[in-house]
Length: 538
Image 1: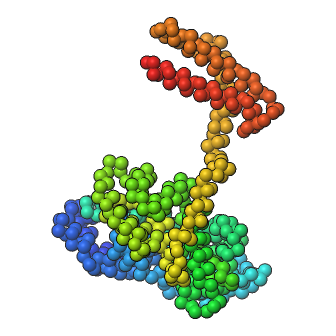
Image 2: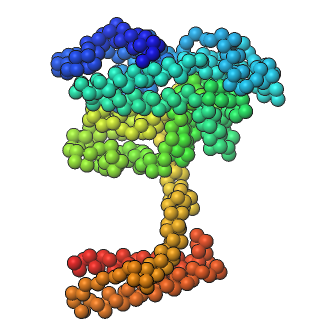
Image 3: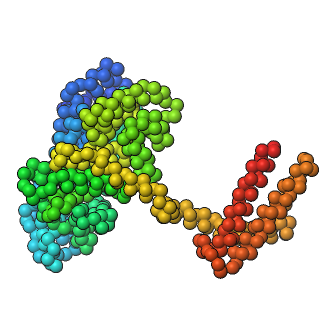
């Protein structure tokens, strides 16, 4: 362990004691014994706990600020009080000097800054704990924003994450009350997300992918990313000259069509979630710019949510059940997704869900955001941890709905979502799209079918050479004829299909004669029937 690591451990220990967590540290790390139930009770219910945690994280710097910001999105894991308090964490630091910025840019882009850019502002546009942004102009004339990562950030993160993992593993091991929060799981998730965030190539790829997804939508703009001027520590992108969504909400200017912007906001985000499965995971009002003609521009794309086809299907089903207030269907869907145990007594949960729908949906006292937020709270009451994808999506919906209602208080969120949901459902039922999404499986079966002839030929040779023997036990003579007939039919079909396989004319499927494929399929069905009959007769 080097000097820097030892110094950082001492710093973290001092902060833990300063903000009242020394007793927890002693019990979990040093004495290796469980604190009393009374101590645990007071620790978790202490009204000052969220504030003390926030102040400690703020004091410990970048790694802990980023961890707190991640946990602010997981009220289902840390509780509403702590999550709300962590939203106040400020991700800012004093700017680094221009000389340091210049040194990083020239090292990363392998050239003099004067040769790389026609102009490069010495003043930063924005500063955060990980990096800062400068305005510049390329030699070709494009106005750009250059994000530069501060020196030493990656090393500090590695130290801190190692220490975090050690601390939480001991707490998880020696503290029953805190074990339910799965602290090691939280740190693992943080480890994964922060390493993605500090590699700027990921953000560049995110911008290109989101731009491709909205390439045919003139109402949505994604900043252009310049690969030739970007590395893992320097990101060069189009400079966006627009108005922040938060300022548009407060503006009385007729320049902005607020209801139209609100509608585009809901539709564009739900398209990302339900159709593309690739969405901005931090779409707050500061990360959305409004350009001319009420065009939306998503910025700061370092944090992205990705949903696979299966999860998007499950999500569509969940949203439909929430919209229909289908309590039984919702519980069955959670069981199917593995969120709830099949053996769980759901009597109380059904009652609470019905109450939730009545108070926050049926009576119009809240929108989809309120319903999802209360659903997350309810799941925490039952010690149920929802999938990260669901929580990330719910957080995004919360931000987007808040932004949309600030623009247009009369907007019908569900009515705006409905066309996107119907399109997503239609895509699922579209045969062409289904085949496209199942190409991997179809190729597997295609290769399996193409491998059948050589397998059969090899088996026949082995039988002829005495290397393989087929042993039959005959119990009843009346079964022989039917079984033998089935074997003859199967053999005939296999042989004829294998012969037809050599013909390259007529209708084709997977580069094979269609009639041969059909023959193999029929053979397979008859074989399954024969095996089933044999097993049943035993």
